[in-house]
Structure formats: structure tokens, C-alpha cells
Length: 341
Image (cartoon, rainbow, N blue to C red):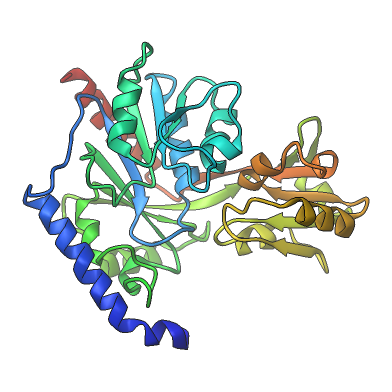
């Protein structure tokens, strides 16, 4: 903790008290939660940013979309639109936000919607003629107005919620007790060779209840980078001059995976909207070099003056072990909920 965060400790206590009271009022029914007559899965975390929600949502889309009509509902962070928006061929990252637009670009057989009011968003989706059969709520763990049927809580390896503290001293949005709402807890961004001994050590630290399941995942990088027209193997990319660019919460693993020698790494804030002057500055720094960025940044930069030299590196979430059991948990919940409609 830096000095400023230590100074703000009293505000963290106050914030923790306020969020605890709010959760209590929802738990006892004084503040109303709304349930819906279809499977609703929430993916979120207790801390701010950087736990890997996007690849986890994409994993669920791949798992479910061949069998069910899937819709994703996100807040649409930093979008330039308001209210409920259902993605269509005219949508872009400015209207939807970068992550929902990424879902829309990658998965043509699902519905992608944004609405800060998740209750209204679900109601709007259910008013469409093409009704979804499963709704995935992205980053809605603290959105208590909707009572999801299934909760997946993420916590990043090396930054476990049990070692953190409330905002603004730490990064927690609510008390550690919030984990009790989770059906499944996933420790994300693990080393791909994380030992069973360390997994068991983390399991003891998290101290989950017996009815909660724990899984460990790592970020699995593609072996190629892509532009709209070209594909280049990562091993080839590392042999040519390039600029690495990222505007995500924790870009260090992305840079480490691609960096070779004295590569220039350009870092911007998470969900950053690039100004014309910034784009021009990046182009001047890159010269004739290619620019490799994250998939989330690519959907914002696509169509800019960088397009002709811009590539992205796809990632996905992969399980260290027991992935089949994770799938069974999800498919069982969705199947039972669908059957009881």
C-alpha cells in the first residue's frame, strides 16, 4: 500500500460499512432483488479490474452457444451511448464499449446487449421476438437488484481477494464476505505449471464453504497474431521490428509474452479511448513497424490511422485441471433451469 492509500484507511472502513449494510438489506429482502424465468449466470469479482472476466465470459459462450440461444448483458463501460442497446450491424465500440463489441464481433450466433440497469436490460432482452435461453451477466457481481441463478466469482492469482482490503485502501468493491454468494470461485491468471501443492495452499487461504467449487485457470495465448487481412505466427513476430501497445488493466503478462529485447511498450489506461493526437503520436513512434495490441484494444483501434499496421493477439481462459467438472456444473444448472421453465 502506498502512503495515500494508508491515509485513506478511514474512508475504506466507511465504504466497507456502507456496502455491508447494502448487502444486508438485499439479503433480508428490504431491498428487492428480481429473479427471471430463465438461466441467468453472473460473472464478476470482488475487486476492481484485471481478473479476466472477458475470457471467462467467452469460455461460457463457447460452452453454451451450440446448445442454447445465448445473450450477454454488460454495462458497456465507457461507451458513448445510454440506456439499453442491442448490438446490430451498425454497432461499434463507441456505442457498446470495447468488451461487448468484442463479443459481437467474435460470436455471430449470440445476442449482445448493454445496459447499466441489468434488470431493465434483461426485461428488454425478454421483450425481443427472438428470446434468449441463457443470459450471461458480465461484471454484475455487485448488481444485487438482479438475483442470478448462478454466480461465478473470479480472483486473480497473486492478487487474491482474501489478501486485499476495501477501497480506497485496497481494491475490494465489497467485503470479502461477498464470496459467500458464489457457486463457483475461479482463481484466474495462474502460471500454467502451478503445482498441486500451491493450489491446495490457495484453497486453504480462500477457505470456501463445502458447497462451493474452486477451479484454477491460466491465460492461454494464441500462437498467431491477426489483422483483418493477415495472420503471422508469434515466433515470426518476435523476429521483426514491432511496437507493443496495451490499454488494459494489467498489461504486464501481455508484454512479457511478446517482448523480445528492447521492444517499445506503449501503455494506456484500461478501456482508453484514443484521441487523434495520441493516434498520430503512436504512428510516428511506430514508423514502418507493425503494432501488436490486445484484442480488446484492437476493436477500438480498428478503422483508425493505425489500421494498416495493426495486429492483435487473441487469448482464452484454460483450466489447469477439472475443466470437465466446471462444464458439468454449468450445463447442469442451465439444463435444470431450462427444464423447470
